Length: 186
Image 1 (cartoon, one colour):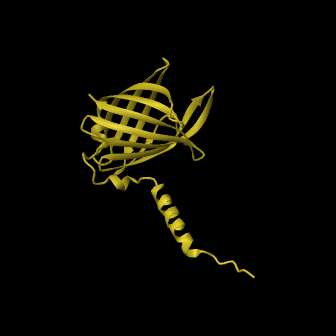
Image 2 (spheres, rainbow, N blue to C red):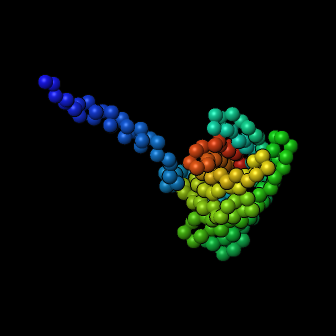
Image 3 (cartoon, one colour):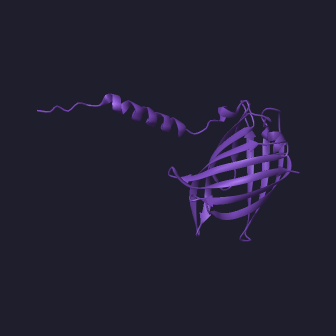
């Protein structure tokens, strides 16, 4: 009679590999960028007029739409608790136009909240080092109806004039696509 003998030692490398792969899938955290330079101050960078150039890619990586944005930005209030207005005028590659006006509030602990007419509830963000992470639900018009999609939006200050932005768009946890932008401060 043959007995079943588990091969525990043979499973150990497979378990270690699985753990390493899962750790590699962990998403970055804003604290990962705390020591990066140049240091981003949202109130300073998003002040004045900026031009942005972007594109939306679907989940396969195909460019679906390109766009440009002219942003007029200003801040008012007491240092440490300012309110900002980011007035964005979009021009899309298909000739359509759009506008979003963000109202941002900086809290004394360095976090940000934001609202806009097409954002459900409040956006929440935080800056560390050269990065800003921003999360929100956008009410996106699609084929005559409104679809609520989640954005995990990351911005990285490259110089005092240039910032890069990459945002993942998802619904029910499934990736729908990405928005890639470059901001250039005038």
